[in-house]
Image (tube, rainbow, N blue to C red):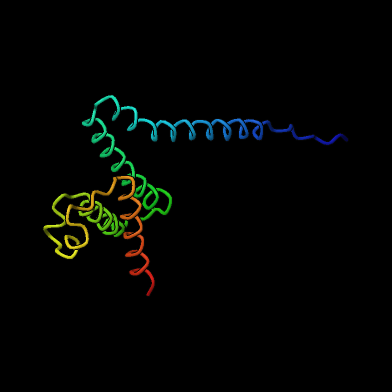
Length: 138
């Protein structure tokens, strides 16, 4: 009696190809996302840089919703509060009216803060994460 030998699967070869393809697509996408505002901004298209900023903001919100609803299977909108903390922080730090609202900041920087957007975003993310950790700690 002969035993039936299983046919070797070629899925590992396909998975390796897909992984390499995914990495290449990810690197190209990251390069495009980093280079697009610089190229469009240098071409004099300040309006399109603003549109891209809003698009990236909505992409970050959609990714957060995808993690909570898609991977965890929960419809919990509590994380939107921390998104709001980050958004409010970013709005305050980029506003020219910040010194008129907070006198102690006007004393430190009488001409305004003038912080670049790429520095404001990590500050806002850190503050939102800090509030999330403080609320989730107890």
